[in-house]
Image 1 (cartoon, rainbow, N blue to C red):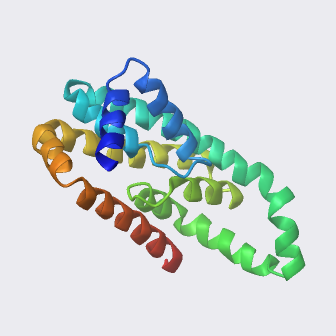
Image 2 (image 1 turned 180 degrees about the horizontal axis):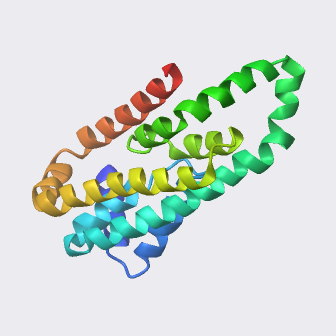
Length: 192
């Protein structure tokens, strides 16, 4: 079953509409959707390695724009959704400390977490909720997301055929490793 799904994704990745799907997933993942764009970027770059740079650019641009939307969610909806809970539980002082810490270290949070498989939407929404400088947030997002997706594209372009062969021979191992990476990312986020 896993092999069939993999082949379907590769076929979709080679279709003419795949870049639009990639952009939509990258946008959504940066603001509200749980699936990272890597799920499409990897098979798309493997299906057409000559387009790896273009795909990384699409992924980067859509992810940064989606990050702006995530920032807006944190900025605009925080008072309606989270503030009443903070007030009810008496956590106003704790949130004020969070904002102060984020103002001091937020750039590093954005740069480090933007490179990891930790869901980027957490960073974008937290940046908006903390009222982090929007333009600094956008610049850091462009750098970190661009670095992440272009590095992945470079690796796939350089080692495309061997990577594809490895994935096809050891698909269960690869999916298990990706799942472990996602779980590990959540654990790192939880304890940082």
